[in-house]
Length: 326
Ligand code: SIN
Image 1 (cartoon, rainbow, N blue to C red):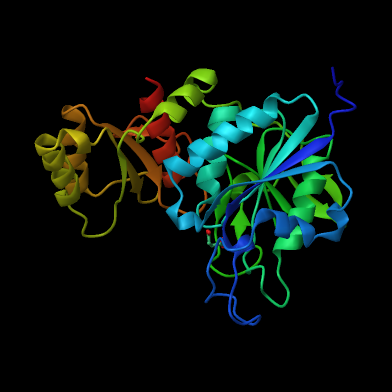
Image 2: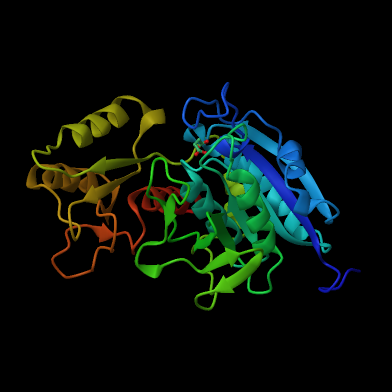
């Protein structure tokens, strides 16, 4: 039996991304291939991690633009195994930045506010003259070992973000993530974690727990939920094409549509009419906002269910997981 004070082992799981990227030239920050360097090599590049009780495992090696159910299944399977180990206090996942917020959300829905699961990344490849990955990994370990840490968080550029709030906001700068109105949970300064507010990780999704995990692991695909943006001159053609495709191909039935609405969740009239038709045919419609900040403020005039503050991509996953668990 290992008590809480002895449970100090960390597990680092690699999934690829720019943090594991390699370019032909050290000066090249954009023309690289993501997911090339093994996670063991990434750990060895951080001298501060030498001698720590660490287990390191390569779960996948992908550019996170290609993230999806197969990697989430592999990752969730290994996280579930390691979370059960009494000697393990926290997990760290290295990941590409492009869909980091989506994986963070899925893991938060699956594993909720338990032992810390800290995702980290880099904006420059491992081969860069001055890569940011080693510092981010070192900071992620500091966070994983911190007493406040719990639940699923993201560490990048010295900031700690909650899984529900975090969003990638910059294409190139090292400080590429933001937590919107909520702000980051904490920062990391020379290995010290300074919390800005109490860490109260959101509870796992309403469908979380072993049943959602079991369903995710057994699924051959997530229920089909599409994301559509409302914009000037929008129409209902995409929605009607989805409905027509589902009518002729049972494997392609759309179960839900998330609309990234304008402003406080307004939707172009022509698109809204097509969405009404979709709802009438049993398709779930959820409304988020395409605005970078704020949330859809609920009011009686809202035509569709709102995303409860989730960004469009996270609202898409929330609905897919809800449909999976139903
Ligand atoms: C990726 O998301 O895998 C590539 C981009 C990055 O990690 O910054």
